[in-house]
Structures are given as C-alpha cells and as structure tokens.
Length: 125
Image 1 (cartoon, rainbow, N blue to C red):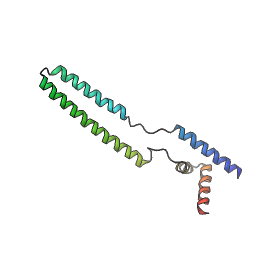
Image 2 (spheres, helix red, strand yellow):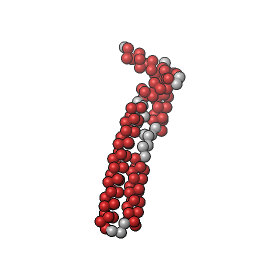
Image 3 (tube, helix red, strand yellow):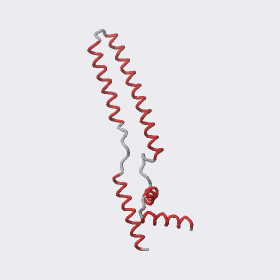
Image 4 (cartoon, helix red, strand yellow):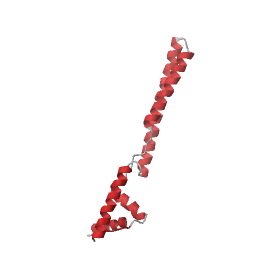
C-alpha cells in the first residue's frame, strides 16, 4: 500500500515536471503580422519612387493599404482556424492530470495503471 502511494506521488511529480516543460504551440502571429506590415512598407516605398504625380501616388497608397487590410483579415481568419484545429486535437491546452495519467497507462506505466484503478475503485464506491 505504501509502495503504491509512493509510486503515485512520484507519478504526480513526473506530471508536474512534464507540465513545467509543456508550452503552447506557437502560431507565429506576431511574426506573420510584422511580415505583412513590412511588405506594405516596401510596397509604399516602391510607389513613392515610381509615381511622382501626387494624386496617382495617393491612389496607389490607398490600394496598398486596402491590400494590407485584406491580408490582415486573412491572417486573423487563418490563425483562428489553426487555433480551433489545435483545440479540437487537444493540443492547445495541456492535458489534465487524469488525461495525462491515461496516456501514461496506455504506454504501460504501472503507477499510472494503479492510479486509474484507484480512481475507478473510488468511483464505484
């Protein structure tokens, strides 16, 4: 009985250590956002050099801004979809202790199997 209790405390410690190492998947939102802004800056610099007439330049600036806004809207949509896919796959949040123990038991960890048996026994009482 004491050996099982010790194995379970060790299991909990392993989960906490694993949880400290876990990090949320990086969708690189900031990098992708800055790429869009940088692309717009380059486009505007090109427009500044290419068009000398103020009205034409202003028109092309507006077109560049509209394209930037469209790219930002697309980026937000794609990031939202990626995040929803990760949530559906269960990878956006770390698994709970119970889920982690179930995974470890599936891998053949004896302490995890013992913990699952204990939870099952408690649920049936």
